[in-house]
Image 1 (cartoon, rainbow, N blue to C red):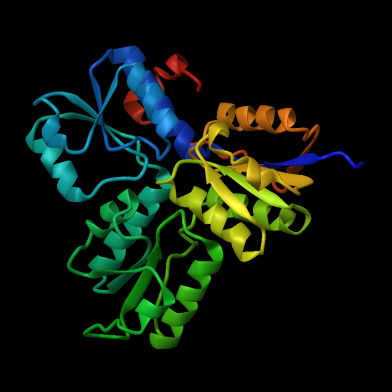
Image 2 (image 1 turned 60 degrees about the vertical axis):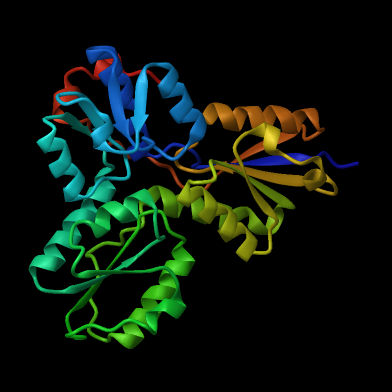
Length: 318
């Protein structure tokens, strides 16, 4: 009988923005000591957040929960100008862990708003990144999540409309929405370069590469991770059964029945140790042949905030 195999996708797991955000929390804890407050989840991964909480990070939903003068870190997903103003009013010492690629979208929103454009933000309602971006020009920005919603859009001047996107969307889904927008608003303009981040794109392309040769795909990531959920969607759209799992304990044995080749990947906020636990579990179920499939090399790095750059030797790796 042929061996049962695992196709381990690469790239997978942490992107540069996530590495930077986690490093920021670790360095801040090492250099300043607790309490270090973090607004919202620093990245959308429950084990990562729990690990940082054990080390002394205090996660809050609002800057109002931070004592006046306290030190607070903004998450990788970014915040609205209103949140920054609230932090200033409380005299909080802010360390900004916003992913530079999210900051890029914020700056584009500001630019389009100043030029008098109506802005369409393609994204998922209530996602932390979307909430922050909408806050840059709330009076000029409309959110759409599906092609169907495009039909209901109207603006005072249809010739001056721009679109932006959340960084962690499905490439295919977003392409369809943009196409619908171009039909409805022929003069619509977009960002100079796509807003969907390199890591989101690379992980989706890796899934597409192996979809035809796998019987099952396991995506390591948390339920509130947008880019992890999109990996599941990409696989299912290719006809490949796919499941989002927090860790190996979430794997149902029925998923493995009849599977000879299982693909394994991880969302951009999932740590590698969780992937390794999944591999150990699969090996115990007889998947004894492991093959790493690399579709593209990633070497992106983002600089730390200036106030932490000189202290970067204190970084603790997860």
